[in-house]
Length: 57
Length: 187
Image 1: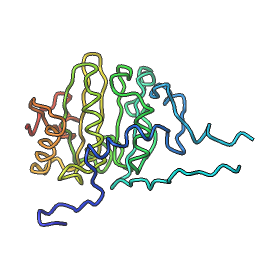
Image 2 (image 1 turned 90 degrees about the vertical axis):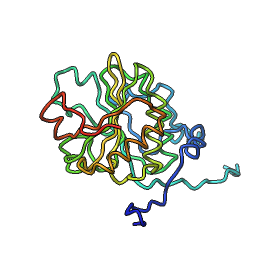
Image 3 (image 1 turned 180 degrees about the horizontal axis):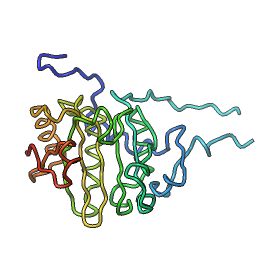
Image 4 (image 1 turned 180 degrees about the vertical axis):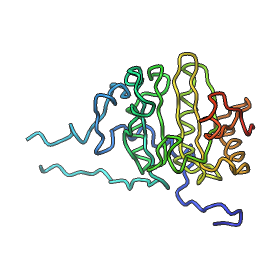
């Protein structure tokens, strides 16, 4: 804890820093499961590169 | 394959905490289900990259069905009054006209996962409630009785959102007893 009694946090990211990544990561994370209840939440443009980007030999 | 990849593998940016998105489906709710029974966790993320991967594929509040509740809480904290971490807590709430909360919802998420609050340890998570005439975003915190910490969070949140109206803090304990519980703090 620092002199203010607040916990020190290493991984601080400003809004501007985080926004720089917004368009670079459009694929759903590994392990994401879409069930019937979640479907209504998805925006219909689902990107799942780790599922469709496989070798087609 | 003889194709050589020239792409540089970028190191992911880890977050201070893991966070879980939760969703309460309005269609399930309309079946007179017990509160909370239609709520389920969607995915837990711990990097900046996975956050955007989820956020970019999920409807923003203006596109969610009326009745929907969408949550982002620290991993292992359930967005319920009964959760042991939330039990003694409370919430700040900001209200927007229908369809106008998208930017502030994103800014709230970024402030939480980027640890922009001086009293970030006090934060449980945030929820957006989509209703017929308005959208409400609430920031849930742990120790409602810690007035200084709650006021600091409320003030910082308003600054981050550029929100000028007065906001109120309600104790969960009061809300449990009385649906029209009064604000204990305002800023």
